[in-house]
Length: 265
Image (cartoon, rainbow, N blue to C red; front, side, top):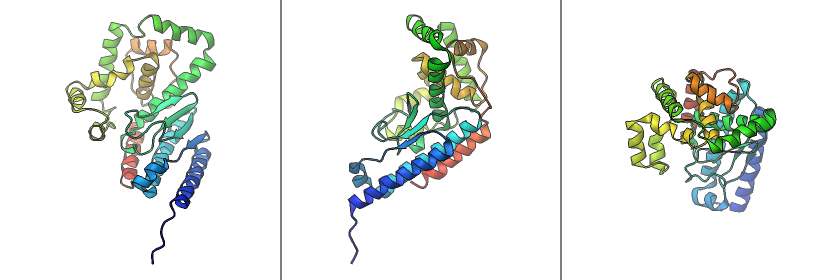
């Protein structure tokens, strides 16, 4: 006779395992790591085995990306994996709150290396604004409210930069077909991307100073050289210093790792 599974006991072991996984990442990254368990409701629906794979694979992937970022000389944020903050049906790839970069499990197939580097850029910019530049940096931030942070000419130059970066293969890790399948984007948006990718890619950077900084950092950290006018704006708003370059081969290794982990889910 097969012994029935005790869900409460299994879920308790699941939580204990995630706590141990968080401690493992903390030891390897040297920064705070918080892994919050998937809700009981989702675990009952999908099975604890599936939810364990979702979280552990996401954690292993984030560990690999952040270890690379750290090896390039950057300070790391706290890393949080939390289904409740970024549900899997959410269109957000990741968010930065205070000293934390937050990601949701179950979205491994859309977490590109660039998304994670982008969130690192947010964290480093926040550090610059609050600790290194003081009142002058805050003044510049408030000043941006009353004038465009990029004027018309600068936006045109930035679009040329993004088009050049796309043509040089810097966005090859995007998986828009999977985003469409999961409902994160519409067919119209995908058609828009295929028609004029630089317009689609640059939209986020035009929403705020913070997004402009993070988008610039994500490319510059990988070795892309922006036009002088755009770099000047980046420095004016105290964008993080660019340290050792993350190479294309290192990005390709991360993409290969993500594909390998996807097959385990």
